[in-house]
Length: 305
Image (cartoon, rainbow, N blue to C red; front, top):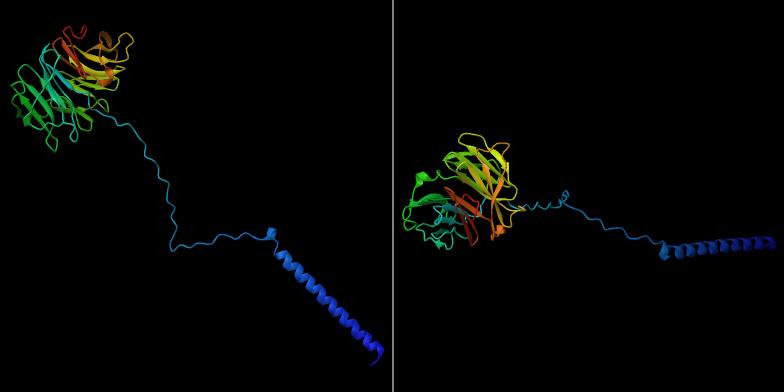
């Protein structure tokens, strides 16, 4: 072999060796670069699968909390004279039963009545020198019944044909019963319904509405109204919040009511907690007011007490 052929062979071997070294360096550099922590990708979320369509659950909307309106009055009161009157609590079909009481000493004391029937609620109370009558829910089913006593509450008898005769608000308060006839209520929550046979009266929130038989309702604004009662040719309202009266103001409105009618303060009952609610009743010029354990009597149409 010539010396020039050997030199050529050795040259090629050096070239191949150089290429292999460069390739090794490149592979090492790539491996190092791939293991740098700053260049690693974060793992993506693990996919989930559902066997059916996905339905979003709506966020429940809280129901509004509205103070319930009540047509239940503070109580019922019916006057017989300046010394005698009857009163009753509204009661409940499911909780405390109604309590009927009688006073014969101008309201100084009240005697609970023992009834011969299971009276649960009261919606109307009527008393006179001859008899006392009550309309209310009776028994476990709270069926509305009308009972009367001609013996000052000692003996009682049911009179089914008299159920619709008293004035009262219907169950849903959309109608009121006046002299045996159901008529639309002048307000959504009547607190007192009365009738003297000619004029019907409904007490509402801060207003009193009256109507004659077959007529339309006429209303008068009475701010702070607690209760109302019919007298001959007028009605009286017990009102709170009157600056000139430290107690319950007594206001008068002449009937029939017109758009120009206005309440006029004629008296003031002191020593009465209006927050307990009041109940009014009248017979002739005698007016009774009952509030909790306190009773007051006026013999001059509500002017003095």
